[in-house]
Image (tube, rainbow, N blue to C red):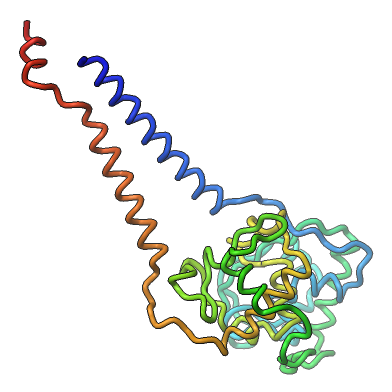
Length: 287
């Protein structure tokens, strides 16, 4: 009897330990993902390659996003072709000062570029930096998107409809519009103002096509969004500022996750103590 209880306790401990390892593996897989890089468009012009790989952060006209991503238009450092090429291929981290403002956002390396593609992007960036464009005037005014369905974008955002290539639902990390902490997470920034912040449809679409954020790049680089999915998400995010914001700021997903982890650890700790022997079994063991 005692041995059967010991074997039962050992099986319970093994099951709980295996479950804990599976949970940890899922968290690690979501956090790390794949390390492959976005693929550049083939036989595209420097402007097209720039829009596909760079405009999501630096904007189509190179004006950047104040306080977040530095401008390229009018940026003296961006007139150096060798410097620009190194930043594109190797990425850049650490604080830099551009036109009197300090920026400290990490830029991931852009992979998958041929030598011709790299030269084309560098040439376009240097042209932007030479002051040929108007850095303070976006090439496309921030107006309503021309396509996309708000309801479909909402369902994709919260994960009710899955992305075709299996990408993670936006609400796993973000909130936006009416999707608050009861339906989203605060692990990432709130995206309610992303449409205007990124310059409208062109900027936000480019950002979703090639997410530059270090946490998003490994997740979506081999699971890209389709054009229809991007259009629907853009439509939803464009409408997000007009939606009723949730009044509850508590991140229930995070709280539930922590509570579940504590319950798991507590169950493992209790099971690890092993089965208690009865008084009769204790007396028999002393014989």
